[in-house]
Amino acid sequence: MSNQSIKAIDAIQEAQKIAFAPFVFQAVVALRKLGVFQLIFDRRRKGGITLEALSKELGISAYGIGVLLEISESSQIVNQTETGHFELTTTGYFLAFNETVNVNINFTNEVCYKGLFHLDESIKSGKPEGLNELGEWNTIYEGLSQLNPLQQKSWFEFDHHYSDDIFSDAVKFVFEKERKNIFDIGANTGKFTIKCCQSNNDVHMTMIDLPGQLNKALKNVKDAGFENRVTGHEIDWLSENPQIPTGADTIWMSQFLDCFSKEEIYKVLKTCVDAMNDDAELIIVETFTDRQKFDNAKFILEATSIYFTVLANGNSKMYKATEFMEIADQAGLELQADIAFGEYHTMFTFNKK
Image 1: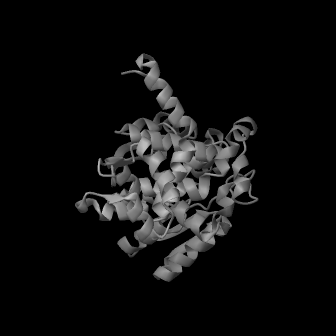
Image 2 (image 1 turned 135 degrees about the horizontal axis):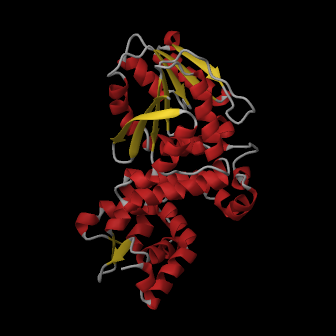
Image 3 (image 1 turned 180 degrees about the vertical axis):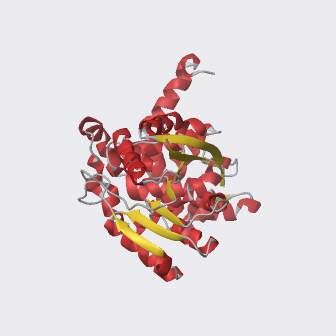
């Protein structure tokens, strides 16, 4: 059924759910933090648990738990039986225990929630106006190393959840060819660099990132025992004339370019092309909105675009694959391979034209 043919009574119900969506979200966050979800789940084999029993076991007033459960029942998150016992619905179970859903909830609550209030300002200004809720930086990337521990944990878990699963397969692909000198652009915590060093005893890695993040990545590399095969190169891609070293046989970027506007993506790729030898290869791994098998994955990416708008930098988003291919062509790259990786990802490999 299309949205245009939905009945008015159903449409207004959906509209009211959106109007009060923040209330439902925070109720879910509270139910998770207070242990209500866990206790309901633990009593599933006994037919659920009553409000009074929840109140007694958790040491929280029946009033407090009651208002949370009432909105949750109306939202099909919990179900109350005829005997007054509460059970988790399938939706409630996923909200409580699904890894992807929990990563998304933590990221939304700890990193994004307060900043989202400033979305309209960001749309008008083209700047991440909500970032002031976290710190005084031009982009969130400048402040990642300065976020409080819970914010850092939530941000990196969100970032890694949608990238780490493909690293093992990606590393296998990378070393199907002989590679001696790989540039890891947007090295983040250094995970890909470390995996490459673990997989190949001869490769030298150069991590290229902002100073604060690069220092953390280099520490992780040192802790892993690979400091002798890894070099760091500081860069600010938003500066007037960013430069990278020459001599790489491979340039790797994983979920990096979506952090920039189209004009900035062109700038990054053109800088790389100018530094590439004729036989060098540039590899891009991204989650593209037009390459998702399931609607919920596309929805997650489109929500992430809102995060980029209001908190990250004000001008980037999750792109379509067709948009990236067009920019790469303009920057002087020729597509060599187009490979699906995992549930969400696409890998492009390019050579210079």
